[in-house]
Length: 164
Image (cartoon, rainbow, N blue to C red; front, side, top):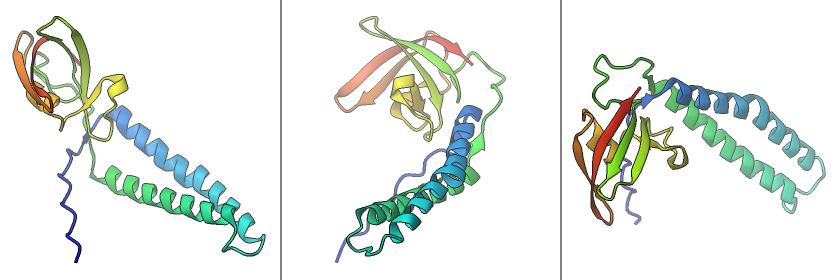
């Protein structure tokens, strides 16, 4: 008998207006463009005859399942999200949507934006509000010291700038 998979921790329902637009655009593209293209390709492959050995048909059906799964996820997730489209009254502290500049003990600078889990992107410096770094930064002010627990130990940073 298989053990049930552990439940995923619930992610924060917050998203920036840009992130919400990106997810909405992806849903629209999948539903109106990509799915009809793949459906047409599957129909053409099916018309060729024996489906059991038709790689194009098998691959197309697999693609359709993946697209439909993503469409279901996006539709459900977009309904759960809360768009945070205004800045907080107190701009001197770190809150959702803030760009935060940090410096570590060696003097290396880092720049992060605190965003929803659906928008996190390390290459852009977007960190999820659910991440240990973002949790340590919340409600901090310029000049504050933060300690972040990382897999390879703890790290200390200093908040040098906060912008919205």
